[in-house]
Amino acid sequence: MHVSLKPPSELTGAEVAAWRTLAVASHDNPFLSPDFAQAVGRVRADARVLVVRDAAGEVRLLLPMQLAASGLARPLGAPMCDVNGPIGAVKDQALLPQALGRAGVAAYAFSGWTGAADVGGVKIRAREGSAVADLRGGFDGWHEAQRELYPKHFKKMRRLARQGEKEFGPETVTFGPATAEELATLISWKREQFARTRRHDVLGPAWTRGLLETCAAQAGDGFSGVMAVLRLGTRIAAAEFGLRSGATLHGWMAGYDPSFASCSPGLVLQERLLERAAASGIRQVVLGKGEDHYKRHYASFYAPVDDGVVTAAGLAGGPRAMAAGLLHVMEQGRFGPASRLAGRTRRRLDVILAVETSMGGQLRGVRRALGEDPAVDRTRVALTAALRVTPF
Image (tube, rainbow, N blue to C red; front, side, top):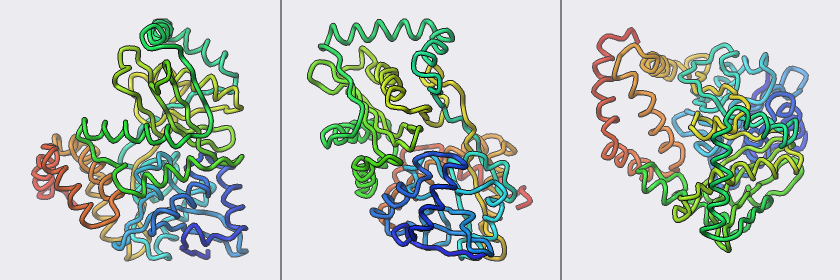
């Protein structure tokens, strides 16, 4: 096994071609494409790709990451990458602990690896379902199936759509490349939402906005940014930006103008988006993690997505393995209140440490989290108590 670690911009043409082949053969998702990795590489200096070759020189495994000075690797583009993990056959993914060790990477913490539980040497901290709308039978087939399951919801949506036009003007929907105005409007809505809900503003750092703008400018057959916009009258009422790879569209960021809230424009747009996606040749739309109440009306099924840690084989991964083991035990429910809060606290701090590239930004974000979320303080007290009795 030969291992190399390089910035996305330094990948050879043969490596990119091998990446595309492996991605299609495993989980064809835009977040796992070399195009997304190269887009992140343009806005983050710590972007790296782990390339694993066999004895014959054939690429068997790739792992896009952002690598901290501590030796901890996070998914490339975190926390903006909903899907992450290694690209390669399951049997080759088992090489990851050894490959990390050879590359000098202590551990890899992931949050969106589909099928991680099937790979040895992986600690799973949590599992969520990612909602998927199956459009292989066309929009009409999908719509009829969902309407039979949730007739009241779809009847309500027809009423709200009529109400929106009556109150605000004729409905128009566009689906395709994003304009600068549409993207700026959506970003503004999301930042206002983060402030209102007291969540960390992941669109505050310049690199995250730059990543969105870079992806929005992509229009290739294998990778492109797609914006769906609902207008009522002349105003933008709701918008959703996603990434397309082949026949898969992954919803990435959605929002709406609160002044249109009476007619639920975001939900009206969801149905319109699926209709236009099917017409453009898309066969599945990934709605994302979390079983939000609205998603169940549009999801054909939920794909399991894992959150966890892979520690490097050998001494480099030793301290990280112990810490990961403790967090794993904490989150599996063996310490009552500490277990209920540990996962929530870790995920919030992970977002801050992943998105903020400067020490000052990280410290400000953590201080804000400590001051605004009493769960953080309660978790620290519970964790201290748990350390006295845990075998780790």
